[in-house]
Length: 215
Image (tube, rainbow, N blue to C red):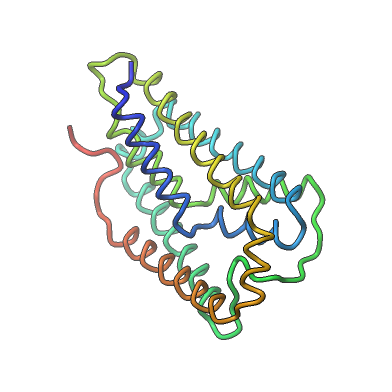
């Protein structure tokens, strides 16, 4: 059975990832500000299914595939880094805006909200790296079935990730009103978010560690 220390480590790691700016948070907050909490929660349901897809892949041993074909793993990392750089540029470019900034967005129906939440999660390099590179490091073969350990660790990540993103969805309206009254703080948040996204992108692109760490 998976150790409690491994579960705690994954929980802390995911909490840190939720609190750092990323594609999931940006999309959920933007949609919640523009269309309300219900839209944000429907989008979060899509993110949840995206988490489950990564969990199924991890439990099926996809990390071993990436270890055998490192070029695929590298391509995914570089694509994710490029996506983060694009988000960073959108935040810091002239005329850019904070995720919490009030904005006009065409309302989307439930199916599109769910689908965009799912796609945003599947293209999120932070989640991909968590499942492909980090999660396997907390699996201890001598403690039992590897797939069961991966399942429990993944469920821990999903619980923390969904709960944390739900908080962002529920507070998005209040945060938006705060930034609307304080344009300086909106600008500060925008540049901090862009800087964090760019730093994470560079870190991903420069990392040359294998998909699965050596024991």
